[in-house]
Length: 421
Length: 175
Image (cartoon, rainbow over all chains, first blue to last red; front, side):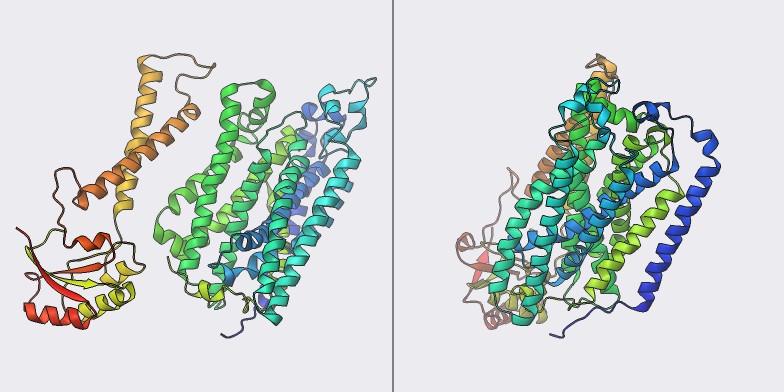
């Protein structure tokens, strides 16, 4: 077999940089417009200001959007490693030819960590993201004293929170480094010994990931709505990350295939990836609905507040429904037939739509809690998403170009070649 | 799949030989009525040139029937016939109806699919399925060729089957 190597052409680089710059310009323009209109908006924020005592300020919207993108793209990076690991844990052969693509996503984790830490530190003084950081909430003498939040302080305190942040990212980065090292070593040495090593490392990673992905979902998103909680929130965030990661993997595989790479991939592999995207769109909906129905049916105010803020709110109601349409009805109806999953034309539309749809899902998880009535959807949101997306793809593709595109010594590559369903 | 009354059966004892045999037989211009196997043989549909099953379309239609039935039933009962306030919700509170709607969709799709399959495979209660050879439930693959559907003579068909790798070639006539 001919060794394939992906070439990250200057044309592709230029396109990504242009996207980044356009995103930057849109974001700057968005803030300019926001500040010009700021007079009307700035004072309608009594609800927002009740806790932290500040009016609405533009930087809150910046932090909120940075946070959405941080969490979403770190999730995509993690899902790349998760996909890689689960293929080994399940001893899957069909995917042997495409494993380098999800693996390349993992390189974002460390960059995402730095960006996330910077955002957290920048938003820290104003408590723009996490209002539980306000120390007066825990002081019984203060008028801000909040009994519920104070009761959670054993878990939601700065030291433990930052400790978890370091442990999670450290663990992910170490596991990713180990898996990547072993995968490249296999290219040189061959044999089945490395495959076994990757499999056992992958199994440990999956255990660590199961706990850490769930807890990071509480830390990074659920704690924004500090009073509210949902016992399935970790699953919910994981489902959203997972299906968007699968859609992105599928999309990149198809794009590479269109460019003439990945001769090992045929329509059977695309079919399997399409089935993954289809199935996990439904899985996400199932989790979404399970969380929604219990809260809706029980009708307990401390729980329903989450959906009141999103559904019964003019700012977010459209996004609330678009979220369901793009992430459930659209892929469900369009990807239902066998042909739709085998032919790349339809997947090339559905996959980016799902990635964007799940970004909207994160928008909907974060924004109503951080910005309340001051939230909006405009140039800032689109611009920052374009910046992060182009940076993420740039990191993934440039790392993809550093090593052979196909793991030529993977013991199951031959099985993958003959995959037929 | 009911055809004529007189058949020639090629008995194969290996699925790889069978797959190649199907190609050879079809290439020589002989129409195969059906191939019976004790277990699923990968790639046999393609070898026989079958179009993809339309069972999934039937499943979709039955599923939609289930969806409609569930919604009509619940809206009719809880919204029109006997409106009650449950948990302070509207009479027709669609989110509450989704689990039942989902279940009925799945139920009718599943029943409809099994029923459709039974009817088209002649396994309906009043049907009398033809048994070409009892060994197709054990360890032999049987290729049935309808004599009336082919222009070739009986002897020619037998020769083709034999050269395609059949271990036995038998005649089988139905009443």
